[in-house]
Length: 61
Image 1 (cartoon, rainbow, N blue to C red):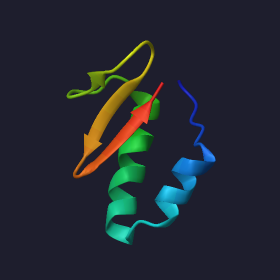
Image 2 (cartoon, helix red, strand yellow):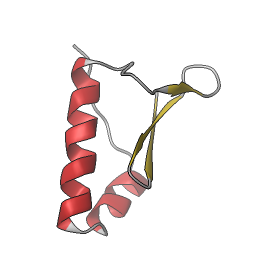
Image 3 (cartoon, rainbow, N blue to C red):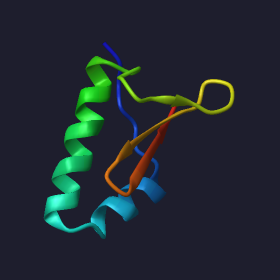
Image 4 (tube, rainbow, N blue to C red):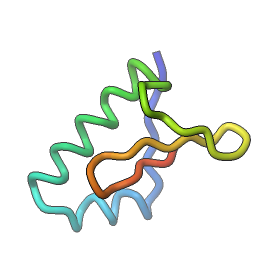
């Protein structure tokens, strides 16, 4: 199992979202804890990955 740490910048961005968008993004982040390389993930540089959730991007390592 993996652990999740949000940066303060990420937390501020989440605080600004509508409830509907927040629920979608939080659900996607929770799924990353169990499966950090889901279908559609894009490897960026080094250990950095990105997934898309609607118009949003979740960047993680």
